Image (cartoon, rainbow, N blue to C red; front, side):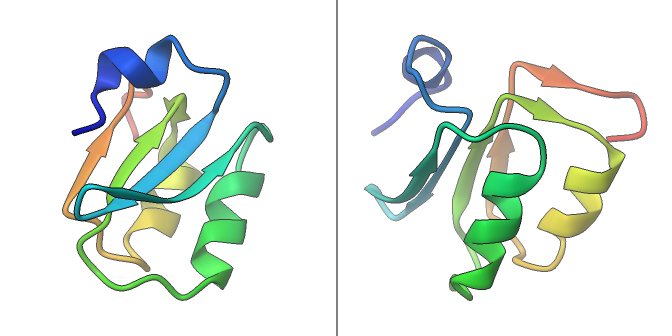
Length: 78
């Protein structure tokens, strides 16, 4: 299973798993990877790894109903 430690040492800024399979990954920054992932219309229950989660990202993530969000940095409003 992919871990937060692996994510932090990777080159990616956003990774999404469904089950144990990586279904989306991106090196883009800001909200771009999350928006692109939402456009794929993923099934609910994905595990999301994101470098930084702020308020906007947190609100967007509610659209896809992830099972879990893992991040090394989260804002107070995120």
